[in-house]
Length: 573
Image (tube, rainbow, N blue to C red; front, side, top):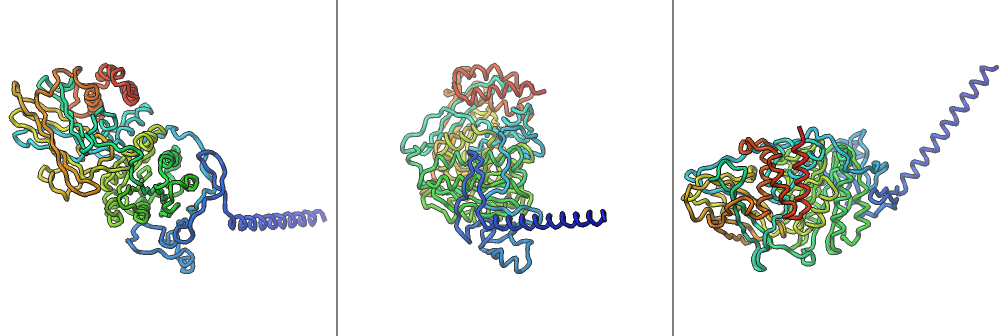
């Protein structure tokens, strides 16, 4: 009898569990038919979801808006319901089994923690571009290179040093170190696009007193914010699983909102996200709808694998839709650079999207993260996309890029800008370009307008340093600098030149312009970090007395920070 009562109790308990389970399932179906709330990680407020257009722009994978690796231009994807009828879930644009379905709002947003939390810098991918040698002018008196305004290598080094580590030798690109800093150049006259400025002096770090350093400065004209062209921006955001490490995605979200807050009502913002596949999060939307854009940005959360190719294909499609004639058209790629689905190398990815990237759409790549980060991919994509590469390691760096330097970040004033320096073999015995190893252009291609070079933004300055050995006692012209570029509005090719004479050299390092001194120190800093043959015998501690002298002379926050980095780096065993 007792056993029978126990059995009845078990049956009743089982029935109750089944009943409760059925109620939960019913509640889940009801919840699925209502709009979920969106956790706004920017201000911790819970908001109702932002509206999106149905069908062809609804997230994620409908009406041809989802893109997978290998999809060709103009190859529409089937509607998800049709794919379901066919029983095809592989290659349909849906995540594979076990991966969460991307939605327009996160189900379980990541915990909000400070995104300056240290990440262990492992599995970082860089390329070794070697170090430029000295060249005798009797063998070749021409030096030709594409201008560069990237700064990513310097901020990567800063991240390493702030963690008590020295950056890998292969990560050092000295031109990006130098061009991170303000240069103090005079702006060109109102009718000119650029002004070439040159100075030089002996360096305390060269072989003998017969060696000097020459600084070539190219300053572009500036544009007031009120005169900036209208912009159509398309954010292509990596939401792969690795973007959850060290709050990388949160850093991207906060950085992009800094940019959005600076835009005008006549600007537009579109958003594409990608993981295994890509989808439109927000179609091109007027920047006056800040709340809607903010909801879209903060709706994203880390998911699965990384298909950068699919993200860029769809991003360029959306950018083409939003294209503004005679305006600013830019794709902004935000990622930790690790692609592991579809084409994964910069050349193969660019080959697959080249047809989508119409003339006049530039690419900015913004890198984040200190673990499993691919610097090569981010830098090379920006180069091929007629744009520039930045690495954001802090909120302050995001402010510099998207607030203080907004116009130069967005508006291009020169296409395919390149420099050719013609040394006078009667005065100069040999020369060495410091940095720009992966920017070299064949001398005979300087005036070849079909050869791709670099783009320069409004107000940007480009600096290049040469170490030169002069013949003893010789006086006269040292070099002529030629700058050639294409106007982005008229597509007319222009060229200017400037000569530099021995009379323009300062007699000592300390008499030289403080910005020149800073550039020489930053260059030597990079040479030591990459263990360059030309820095043999010098140490980071040797630079400190010279660097500390510049703090009062320049009164610049970047200089103060550089001196602190130098001190910290010199203490690393």
